[in-house]
Image (cartoon, rainbow, N blue to C red; front, side, top):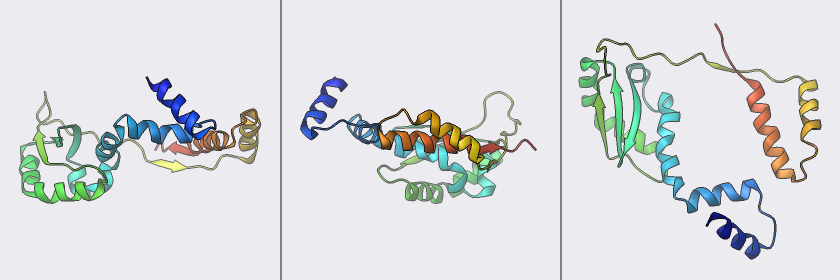
Amino acid sequence: MYIEKMTKVRKKNDHQNTISDVLPWLSRNMGWEKQLDLYSIFVNWQNIVGEEFREHAEPIKIERGVLWLEVENSSWLQQFQFAKIELIDNLNRCLRLTSIKDIKMVLPKGDVHKKIEKPGPAVTFVRPSAEKISAFQRQVECISDEKCREALMQFWYLAEACKRDTK
């Protein structure tokens, strides 16, 4: 089914589709855009909520427009209840295509006094050496599609440059 649709797109445009052409089309036509928008909350959680809240709760799932949070303890659950409307508004301001209708909160399973783990080490940017960049450029020279080659180069550069602090 997917191949048939892509063949029609290719015939209509009469040119070869690249990854940069296909991914947005695929996301839109498979209905993934709204899900990606909703789940951006997980990626941006640290920036959406205040420092005080992000240390005591984390998002665990989204079902039918309802965000489920795991909250550290019953005291913090109460605090989140008081701030629930403001939190929903903040979340919805970050979403483009969808919205959060409600927030439900649960306590951690098992040890009630378990502390939510802090985020891992911070990521730092360490520019790859000119030699490494040149070596990778030589490796991707064989890719004829310039956009694809450039996208792969950017992906490699970021993967190579972003390092976790081990302190």
